[in-house]
Amino acid sequence: MAPFHARDMGLGPFPIKTAARRGALTLTDSTVAVVIPAFKAESFIEEAVRSVLQQTHADWEAWIVTDDGEDYEELLGRAGLVDERFHFLSSGRVGAGASRARNLALDRITAPYVAILDADDRLKPRKLELAVAALAEHPIVASALDVMDDGYSHLRFVGDGEDRVLPPGAYKFVNLSMDSMIVWDRRRCDARYDLELTNMTDLELLMQLWRTAGTVYHLGTPQHDYIKLPSSMSNGIGVTEKMIASKKALLQRLETGHYRFAASGAAEGLIAFLGLSLAAEAAYPMALKETPALLFEDHLEPMLRAYEQRVKLG
Image (cartoon, rainbow, N blue to C red):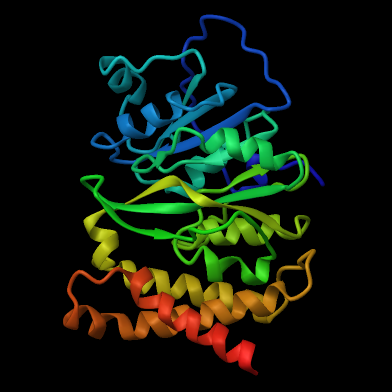
């Protein structure tokens, strides 16, 4: 696979601020680079970073990319969160976007494995340990989610059950929520985040990875805390329109053969999922009126299960 360069993704020469290193760190075949984009993350990032520090797999490095002008190295330092495995970068902008911030780190990482962590989410303590073990045989590892509100109270699980190997066509029928909980082996598959999409960029990245990776190993015990902020729980002002537009864009790409997947049946399964998800989007406002606290996942899942039953019976 040809190497990626910042210029290929429309990334300019952004200013970079790197933490002073107190000693030379050696990367190994099991080093995981954890990428944390940070935009208005002051209220949550300490929890995210603590969850990295608490990993049972200690062979990691954290790449924290500020996208709001905040000095997160100083902020974390005031909280006593200092570690020579931290790297700090800046997009040089305010609100350049999580995709651009992630790409900035991805273009500099030399570790073999990459994990994505949003600044308002957390890793369970064994997340990296279990992922690295699975990556010995699989190119991508995903995890069930522990979905929580912004006070870290449990709302529901997504994708919990047995550990299993998922083909791309079945992946979203298990992981029906967000996809930024993945860990992947960059030597077997790699990609950069799409700068054209406003939403669904994690799924789009997976679609790129699936060009060379035929499966995902799914950890059925939740290893990732997905924090639902109030705006995401209600879809917020303008969020629904952007989400729908991104889903339609991905659907069009799939229908026109934009992605050449390594596994057969991948496009068909993803097309089915996105069609059902768009139908759920259309019905969600009315469902929210009837059940104001309804999570989109709770709204979508019955539609997915009904489809699976129809296909099975058919």
